[in-house]
Length: 130
Image (cartoon, rainbow, N blue to C red):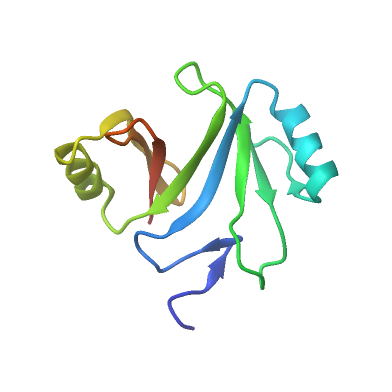
């Protein structure tokens, strides 16, 4: 298997690549119903307050993501998630280049995740798969 296989709808093996999006909403159920109805997205049931969103067939270009209840520090909007080999190194390099950490390294079953804001105010996530 080459290093660009699809895992759970996310492209794996390409460090620095945008691998998913995350939409924050104060009404994720309503948002999910909207995107499902208008664009045909397959929006999953809530899991830890996060609903996965499959945006199209895996053989077509594009990315999948999810819709979550927006936290106080990011109540509405969309962030991209960027895959990295070493999340600690990427956080440190981002900070050195002027980014601010919103949520430091968090551990989940299959990955680590952190949220930052770049020097011009754009929020993004870093994800390192285990």
